[in-house]
Image 1: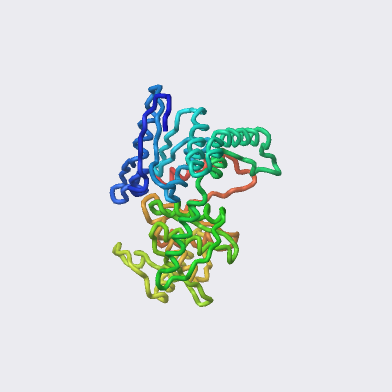
Image 2: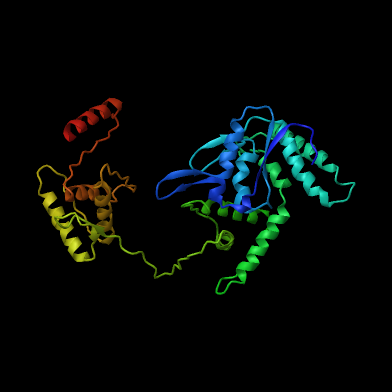
Length: 367
């Protein structure tokens, strides 16, 4: 393409490297950050104050594995956000908007008739004008809080949607040919494709996790299986039946004098030990007696509290309705590991000064 302005080009093939090598990644063993090709180049170009223009060229087919991660660069934010929290902002270059989208649509129109090819710039200008009008006229209101638009809405219309759809259909066909799998029969309309790209973007990150909420039959499992197959992940599914139960979580180091942390398999011994501890606690002078029925869940809760608050600077938030036993469980767990309990009594006259007084008493007690 012949151009009559000064520029510098940085070609990158995103298909030749992994997502970590492209955007950067953490080493989970050393917790060290390693820059990716794109993050390094973009940081260099965005900090360069020379008047020449810089073009970062992704020289590869559009791929769901990386195109979704570029949304914040292509929209009004014009910021590349890395998983280490760094945000690399592009300089404010409004004149580039038309050129970027114009290049995309002109490239696509090269396969059309000669009288259609020149329409790319007209279509781009018209689309941007419509966008500006929508942003100016269709403002969010209390009844239309979803009226928030950015340049991503333009890019949705200009990205090669058919190519992405064709790619996912091929991936789905390949998946269905795998032995022993449950066949996926998805109709890949735009929303389904966007859901798959979101799942790929999230679970493709280190320790990425995602909760899909929807009614039965909405395609959550099929979308997840397709996204996992695209990035070559294996799916492990738990079959929950009416007889499915969770494994008891009972382990600790409080039943012996040593600090050996072990699985407490003898339920009757644990229950007898905690009942003895509760009886000893109730014999202490000036305490509020604990009258707990130590069923299985209560015992598991006590072991959890002991495990957490027994750690250096351990802290825990217990959530539940009044009368569910949070205070009693905490008092018992604290007594087991020989902790003292300091409780704030909140009344309708409790204010900041009372809180400061309680804080002073707590610090004096603990010093």
